[in-house]
Image (cartoon, rainbow, N blue to C red):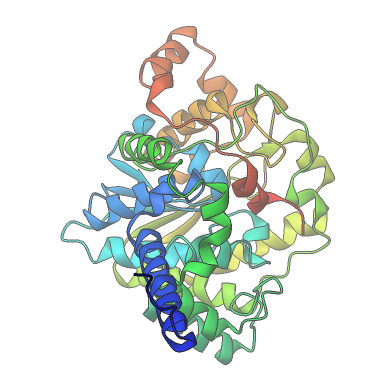
Amino acid sequence: MARPPLSPRAYLLVAALAAACVLAVVWAWVALMPLGFLDPEYAAWAAKEELLARCDVGEVLVVGDSRAAAGIVPALMPRITTNLALGGGKPIEALSMARHALACPDPPRRVVISLNPAQFTRSDLFWERTVRFGLLSGREIAELERVSRETGDWSVYEDGHGDGLTGGVRAALYEIRFPSLYFGSLAKGGVFLRLRENRRGLAQGLLSRGQYFFGTEPGCDAVAIEGHLTAFRPLPVLDWYFDRLLALLAARHVRADFVAIPVNQETWRATQPAVRSAFADYLQAYEAKYPNFRVVGPTLLPWPDRFFGDPFSHLNPAGARLLSARLAACLDGPPEACSLDWAATAAQTASRSKEQGAWQRFPANRFQASITGASARSSSPP
């Protein structure tokens, strides 16, 4: 005997229940298994967050942008070092990392800050990376809203790239991991097809204590973001976070060093002298304000093109090795003897035996392969 057809009401109820079940499954996957579908850089971020959650921060903490993430190798530092620098990192992320690290039972004794000039002047992947990857808590995003209101600068908080949402609605949806915000990543990542690769990336990120590469080509002479800046004008909201970061470190009597990662020669030549001097003056003013803060070497310095792996002036493995070896000697020496310019670095590494020794401490298979694509856009011109 045939079943009677469903009434329109019953049909709509069954359809609604089926849709709710599908939504629930997708929502659970988005919330619980981001390694399965988010792009490969997420694995590196997850490794940093796990190191922070474990309070495995070492004696020296590195915070900053993607150039620092690629260029400072903890394995080559004389003390236990953790690299929590991020692609698209700005003073907002640096302050968050430092706060959590200083709350640990054995906090770092020194913080190395490395941010290129552009990371003070634009929002750069705040929603696409920082919030999307779950780095900031709801309280920290609410703090950004408050600071934006106080400074009158909504350039970061309201930079939604035309999605039609206000910052508050967007923040609420990200906090609950609303699935529609992740549909693009689910489609590109094949729902679960990135799980194996991202688990491998997470393991490598933990092994390298947070360091990871972007481009790894054996040289690049493309002009990076500094060469496209017409002026250095820090956003008020980012200046507030930078000041608060330095104030926190001063209050905790933690030594803070600002280290500028080198750029390739073409970028240095293309950068306007006014941009260089304004950035240097900006940092020197903070150096005068906070006695625990010092700027190590020039704030913008050129290295040979062969040490850069992509058009965004990320150091390749050879460049990262040399910079880290030089930085290790710098941080342990007197300030007046510290220089990261190419002449000083070349002199330090002139001995073949020293260079071979550095290679032995920097095994090629310890670190994650190049991360490009969307993450590289964090250094692209606006």
